[in-house]
Image 1 (tube, helix red, strand yellow):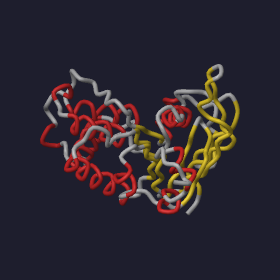
Image 2: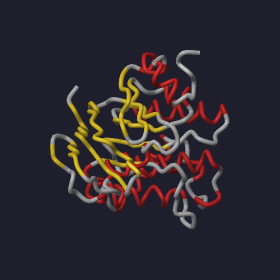
Image 3: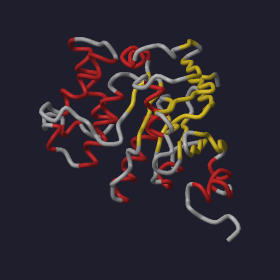
Length: 242
C-alpha cells in the first residue's frame, strides 16, 4: 500500500497548552487507524489540523503525495478529507436527505440527479434511508451519529475521520455502528477513528496511535499497544508496577 496521508513534525500550541508536539505518522491507503488518549490529549486538535480547521505552528501535512499544509479546510474536503464531529452537528431544520445532499453537492461537487442518487445511496449504506424525510433535529442519538458519518460519506471521502462516534451508545447500538464502519472500510475508504470505547475501536482498526499532551507516545499493532505498560499508565490510569 502507498501512503495517503503523511504527517511530519506537526506542532501546535495555544500559549502554554501544547496540542501537537512534533507529531509524525503515515496512514496507508485503505488502512483503518485508531487514535487513543486521555481527555485533553490533543486528539480532536489533531483532526482539526488534518482537516485545516487549525493551522500548525510548524510541520507538514501531505495528502496523496501533495503538500496541503497551507490548503483551506473547504479545499481539503474537496480533495477527499472528510470528518464527523464528536458532538453531532446536523442541520437540524433540514431533512436527513437534505443533510446528505449538502455533502454530495458541496463536498463531492455533484449536481442534479447525480447528487440525489448519491445521497440516497449513502443513506441506504448507513441505515438512514427510512428516515430520509425526517427532520435531522428529531433523530435519536444513534441516528444523529449515523447522519454525521453519512454527511461525511456523501462528500466521497478518500480519508474519513471519525471523532468519538460511539460515545453514548448502548452496546446494541455500538454493534450496529461497528457493522456500518466495517462496511464503509471494506468498500475502500481509509479511516482514522478517535474513540474512548476501546472494544468498538479494536473491532475495526489494524493499528493504534496513542497520544498524550499532544505527543505521540506509541504506535503499532492494537494488542501490542494495549499491553504496553506506558499506555496502561497514561491512558488506562494503571500502575505498571502493580
